[in-house]
Length: 140
Image 1 (tube, rainbow, N blue to C red):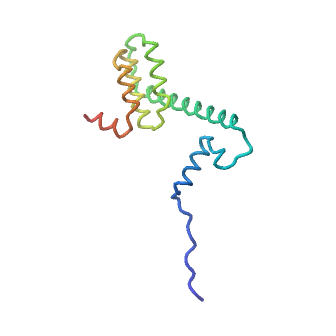
Image 2: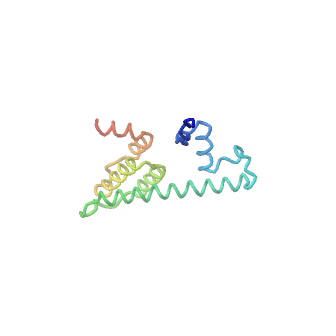
Image 3: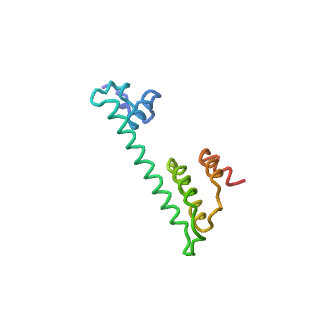
């Protein structure tokens, strides 16, 4: 009896085309790639919008959990500027990586304790950084 080659294992490595399709499906933008006739452009846009909003909500709530963990049992340092809070939330809602959420949570906790410590300009710069750049910046 001849030796048979071992059965092929399915590779966990995706081709670029497979990766594109997978990402497009996860974001609801695969309609024209898959000739998806089950939904309209409007339905897919609504799905994508709701999924994006849910992800932003999840990000903000995760950051608030991180902030709460970093808050001390000391009195807050005064009233937080409502415009600062609005901009903070706008900037933070797209932060999805856990280490960056931890950083943004620490920033929020510090701002609660000492209002005026972080400028919107600094937060805007931080938002544009990758996780790696932010870590390098912290070291400096």
